[in-house]
Image 1 (cartoon, one colour):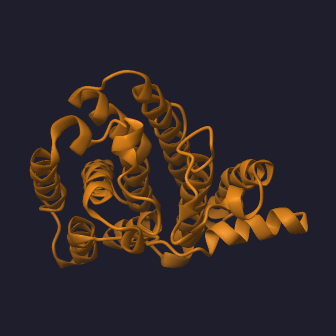
Image 2: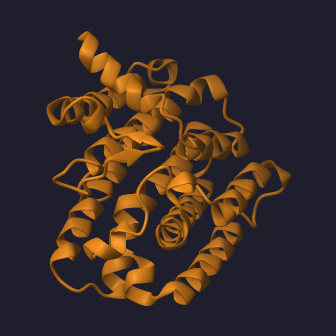
Image 3: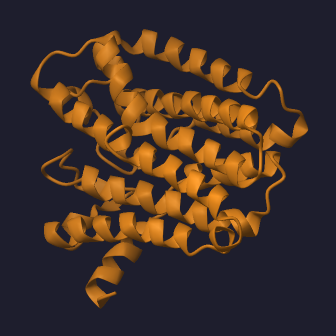
Length: 268
């Protein structure tokens, strides 16, 4: 990898963040009895995909943000062309990492199912499609259904994939995989609604990026479309839904339950 491109990729990957999606993947895999060494390449891959999406989301043509995680966004620290290429590199590197993983060599059918789950979640049927809806919603008044569709794609899809991939890689049954996907979807929606609330009530120091920007840009968020009180109630409902999705599991799913708690009370 050329030095400047490598430096740009490392700038974004090492900027911090909660690593929530890979933690969900590893925790869901642990419930299914999976081997962490087998799952780690896939956990890295989903963080690569998430990081690429943030790099592109911050670009002037998208959300036009100057700060991410308390420091200049990649296109500000380097330049727009390098930011685009760094995002492209991370996205493709994610699939190389999974394809060359030890599990893919040993159990290709299981790895392929997990790779396909991530590809669907990251693409036009998931994150990219959700981002497109998000951009379109700035051009006309949005409804609650519009907000739900945006959140399902741009955020919930990747969380759903993380939980489902973990279960798949751990060797779980189709029923357990489906339960984990439901949990991941609810967790992702909770994460996004909480993020929307924090944009209204948080500070730069807490968020590491500009706040109160969504409303000024006419973004389709829960507080903008439904109000802050309704957003708080929605978050509580999604918290309950995520926890209910784990009701069939015992203490082995406690890490996943703790993730729900952390997301529901986060201020960053």
